Figure 1 (cartoon, helix red, strand yellow):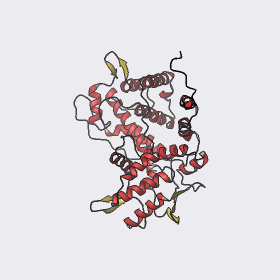
Figure 2 (tube, one colour):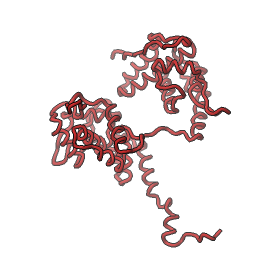
Figure 3 (cartoon, helix red, strand yellow):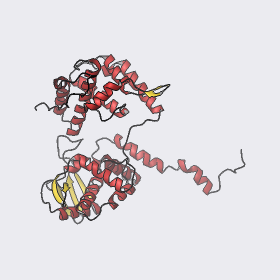
Figure 4 (cartoon, one colour):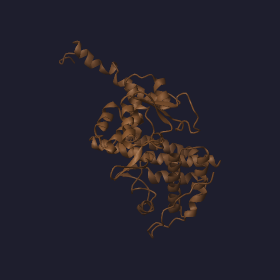
Length: 375
């Protein structure tokens, strides 16, 4: 497998900080990305690794004035953490990243905006660099006791401030219906309705799985019934045919899919396509388009900006828990290999039905609530 092409942005438009040499990225970003590709990671994962490694290379060059090379020193990782993680000061929250360096990273296209990144972004970049050290079989500074303690204490400090991981809201039945209500009889509306129901009802498909749906792997199997053969997924990178590879699209979801197929006139290739001006069918949708469709429909429905493509998957699992669908059946549809990933959704649904949490209301209904004058 040839090494991936690493694209470096234009030199930084500033005289305060040294510019980057595109060749600097080759030893770290290209080598690590090639190894990750060889392991069979998804294209989305590889892109996220490349982005993280490019950021490390840019930050290191700007901070130390020399190319990054593995293994990194423990002090460099500690510096990276204090540069990016916020801490309390008398003047408020602050980090150690110099403003000029911060602006240079933004100007070079290595980050979107100035200021400290989200905790999840920092942890992802640390995890990627740790993976790069593992793959190259060199001493891993992320395993150093001082780095691990700093990370643990930083997580605790963020948690005490109420900072949590940014998880997208789940599209359970009610918000999903709100999104579907925005889908009119236009070609785009018919497509979006079919896409949303296909992704949700077939087991909460990931966005790349939705765009992988074709006329060759999706077939009509009966009245108001289609079957989607999912061979390649996050948990089945080799594309092996498994007993649970067939994902059903039934009833309303099947009706919506059939309506889109009929209106689009498509008979082969990708099912979900771009719609150009004049309601012309274009090329297959990219995975990112699934996110855009969810967010656009949520905005039209007047819902908060907390929904994205993964909301379809988490919404399906959450709704399955709410409706007491057996865990094994849910896993067969979603493709999860381990029940651990699903248990959080099921426990949340069970807690919402908890009799213990309703004891006060139940007591009041049968006249057992304490008198308001009792002490």
